[in-house]
Length: 146
Image (tube, rainbow, N blue to C red; front, side, top):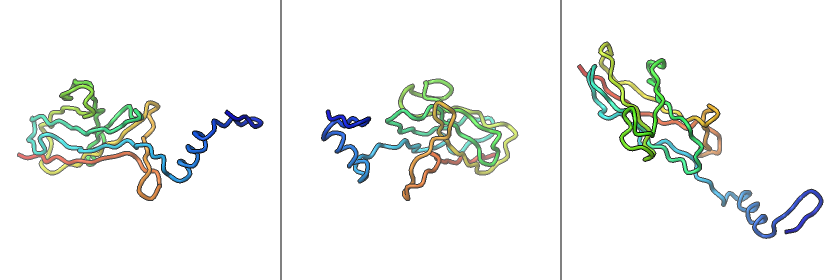
């Protein structure tokens, strides 16, 4: 270990880390929401559907996953991975919530937006292809039939 003033450098490991960070060689896996869906994807009023999405989060950044009906933003659910409320297997990284389609729901296709939040309630953001930061989101749809 080399000390210079207020800076302590741990030899080659430190230099390698700095070079990797500068060149972009050190990549940390970003969280992702994948395979968002409602099961079944076609339901009638009074039937149950399970809202679900797989969370890939190797660093454990995400604490809450929320699903919201785009056409009716007041309909929103916190998904879970606890094996309760429609989640089939606790800890399998598939976040879910079972809901009954309201009896008064009109027929048609409805879009669901999924968002991820950290422990402080902040929307999780990830780097896009151009390096810009964007919210971690996914989407799915369900069709209500009569």
